[in-house]
Length: 212
Figure (spheres, rainbow, N blue to C red):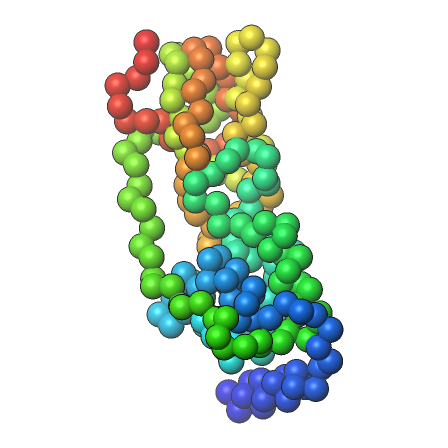
């Protein structure tokens, strides 16, 4: 514990002497990204091991934050963009990643307090929609309204329609315990009768009366 405290104190002292080479600041741009993408876990009582709610808490972790977001390990998501559009997508955009990295490499300045937004209240996740599950791989016996997917392992899940076209449902690069178990689409994917869905996992089907 003493060694960790000394290491943190050394990191903070070293950070105080880093030259500032960026106009991006915590109060103006970076806090808004962190509040939107990170503090639901990185706050007191959250599931993450440290809080990032204010500059004093976040600054010692600046280089670790940069490395985690550049490697797309944080926020934990894992699904490749372009393979499905998901309403519970917690991943950072390319622009957000670029801003975080530039802020850190530019000395991670704090900025003026007048620009700091209020810390968001803890938001409870939306209720899980009522669904039925279809184990994969599967050939759909009727037109099916797919509202989400539970991948069982990293890899691609693709729906091959009877007309020869296909729908990429998800491509999971890796799987971690922090990632969501279920990925819910922005808009339900309607697949015609006879569609063959390859991959491992479960389709989440609308619990309403299936279309004939």
